[in-house]
Image 1 (cartoon, rainbow, N blue to C red):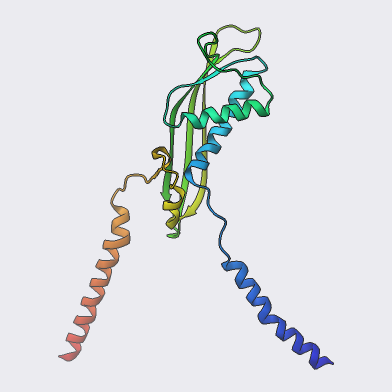
Image 2 (image 1 turned 180 degrees about the horizontal axis):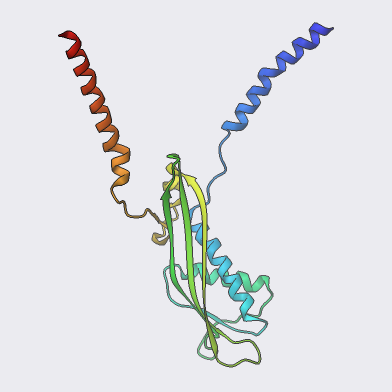
Length: 206
């Protein structure tokens, strides 16, 4: 009986190792594309704006911008969730709040790990808002959100597939050090090694 138990345990060991291997090598969760990350930024800003609007019925105008629809949709969702009355802007109801996208983009940064890059989705909005009930005039606020994460280095074609130019990521300008480190420097070291080996055999042959 003792031998049988021993055999059973040893037979389970390869299965356990196989399960561990499968767990490690299973496909990673799909990365959010750049447009989705910018949408998250817009959603956070819109919620902050909605919190400032209070309970008054108001219309919100988004200044014309190629990504203005992202902010427009986010404002509608944010006001609905907060149950705030929102009306369409027209000549009879001029904008109570005006939002202007002042900056947005996706930026990549190289990491020590060649298989991954850092991604920063950034969204900035300047908002002109009515003062709360009892107040007079208007107030100007700036909302800025940056979401940072890490993505696979070979996944850029997938996370930029939305087709929107503003959702394309960019790397910072190279100062030349990266090229030297990754290509020229190894080539020089290799060439120097070959020369040393040739000289060594030349000296020995004499």
